[in-house]
Length: 157
Picture (tube, rainbow, N blue to C red):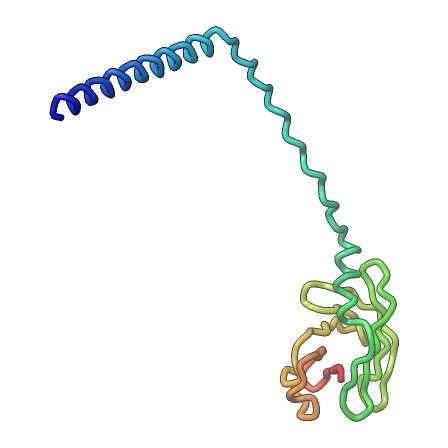
């Protein structure tokens, strides 16, 4: 029995060696074949597409966009009010009842700070802010307001 095991072990080891030899020969043949096959030419890099330029807004476009947030009716105290309309170029039209006895139409220019306008020879600025900034107790607590100067302001709703 012992002899049979030894013979079987020798037979199996002989089979494994021939398999290893045939695997090695196949690998060597594959290497030689791949070396004989010419490599494909490298592809030329494709040029990157230039991004489409985004149009830069002009000053009047920016002013018109900025003006839209001011458009409409603003209410003050004791009958005062402001209507901002007609954004054209850099200007807006201001219709103001700015105290009990005085009203007028003015041309305003939209700036990053607000709307600059001239009234009675004085250059004024409608600044966005809240009701507390107007200094008027009837507008206190409101959030969407424009202040001309302390004691003169207008708010929405």
